[in-house]
Length: 327
Image 1: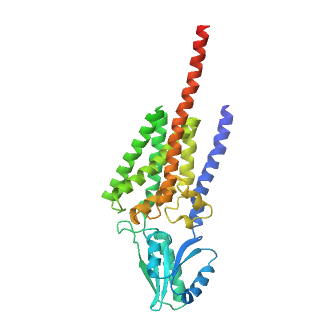
Image 2: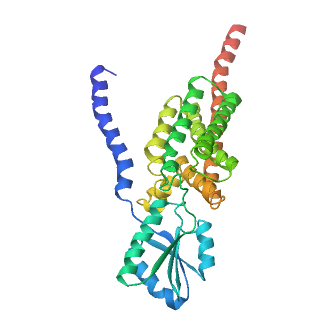
Image 3: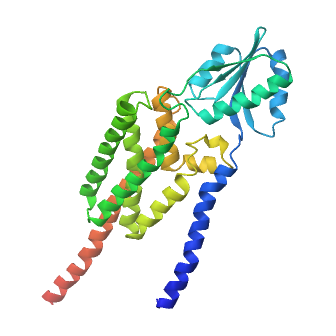
């Protein structure tokens, strides 16, 4: 490629990449709003009918789940089946929230339902069933953990590739680095900063698995496509995985289908699994953990497959040279 063509390529590609990055990060943030956000309603049917009609008028903002009483609604919040619940009783209306699940959603529910109660002159009591830790009431530290884990995974996969590690050595290096990242991250977030307070080893496992999902994907695609695989996977994780993760709010707060797509990528799955493990005793962590496991397994499998293909490619010329020397 001539110097002139390279210059044109740079001039054109850089603004395109900047526009893509701006779209990926700014668009979901600018369009944050509830979309089929799971919300529970509990109480006698006659008492909740009007409430459900009022919620239905909010243009698909909420996905209503009905429960018989406060105990069932509280269990649903603790199991992460819903982000909150409205309990209608003779003594008044109660709003159950879980700021540990999403401080943004908890605040949104208080504001929207509080305004509605004020208009109707109804007494509304808010109870935070699963509060966020006092050391991180806004969930900023958990949100901030998404990017460093992604960067650690990209770095580990790139280093393994550039060092020329193959096969089981590459797999061992990727797994070993992910384990150390998980332990170090948990020591910082749990033991030092105290911004997560679940089972220490379960948190370390989630953080390590989230790192391995990225690093294995980077090294795996690089083993199949060459160094270009590093850039492709890094771009996917950084440009789409991070802004689409919903870690700062909730997947249901992002434009469709961004929220759903983000949960199939390692940053989104990792944030969801960590939140469940850190604050909800592992409730609703199975799905995100399986997503991370698939990424890790496919990535490590690609590393081994790429090694076999490269060994076969290298062995063919050697065999041809031996035949030529014999003849």
